[in-house]
Image 1: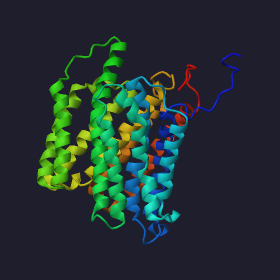
Image 2: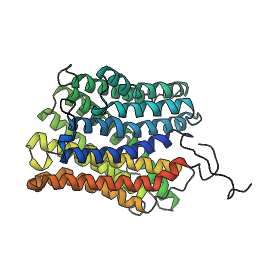
Image 3: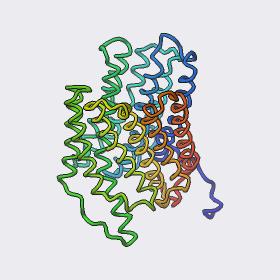
Image 4: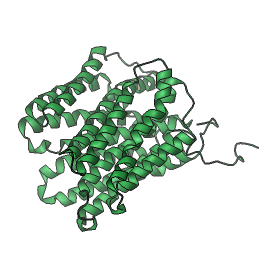
Amino acid sequence: MTDLTRPRRFALFESGFRPFFLLAGLDALANMILWLVLFFRPDLWPSGEIPAAYWHAHEMLFGFAGAAIGGFMLTAVPNWTGRPPYRGPILYGLTALWLAGRIVSLSFMNILPTIATVLDCAFFPALAIAVSPALFRSGTYRNLPFLAFLSLLFVANLSFHLGMNGSPELGEHIGLYTAIDIILMMIVIIGGRIIPAFTRNALVKEGLRLSERNRPWVDRSAITSIVLMVILDIAFPLSKVSGYASLLAALMQAVRLGCWQGQRTLHHPLLWVLHLGYAWLTFALFLKAASLLLDAALAANWLHALTIGAFATMIMAVMSRAALGHSGRALVAPRPMAVAYLLVSLAAALRVLGPALYPEDFDVIIGLSGGFWIAAFAIYLWKYLPILVLPRSDGKAG
């Protein structure tokens, strides 16, 4: 039987990135559609339940970003350790846990708070348990901090649920901000590994020379400044001390970003989007510093610069590149994906700067920003659904 006549099989559970990168895209789309409906029709949300804005924030972090983290870990660990791709019962179970968390987080499901907390918080510990044997057996310790990150995301999610149930006080705020800080640190570490490496490899393949402008002290300083900022955020939340730490972190990320020479990647969407995501991260930290130190109105929405601009852009960038590479396809982004990348940035720019520039049009800004987000992830799903559910193009397993 030839390749042209061989039946195509369903491959969604042949590797860890497949179900979770699909679920991340579906969740990004469904979450935003539901959030816009609730924003314009708040009467549709059950009264006396978790406020809709908190549900939206929780689901973007622990649902959308959580799925992307799951897909990344289940794909990266086999690469780091040489083990076969995750498939079978482990992958089925993790997917089911993530889906269960999304279902019980919907207030109108009327799930007992204890059951909802247990089911929603189970995903990150289960993910850590699944990947830890391979990480420990590999004998390399540079990737073990990711187990700590998964553990801290579990603690953050638990704090959110306990806070929404009344104890500890402000636990929901602590949980959300902790999750944001952990995802931020993950992006700083992962970005520092992949962005310069992917950029160098692509330019060398084209016969271009990438001057060595990166220095180990820059990477160490960039990571250390983020860790310091997170510590001071916890000790002195939303204070001038935190503002100065954020300014230092922003400056170090800017230096690091400059070393990566992103201006040379403009003809490669899969590359420039990574630089764009890290630029949003840097910009968000500058906005945070401006908000805390100067009380600048234009910087008040720095949190959305971080979550929409940096997190969503980096997540889409990593998912779209990894799905191509790990499905045996050429590392060339489908043409519409460049539009999707830019739409995420438009959504972020509107949500961050629009309310200060056009406060009387706040509802319009929210609608447009959400619309750009929906369009971006609709394009992602359109182009990547076949890649994620169909077998590798080279006939290999995975």
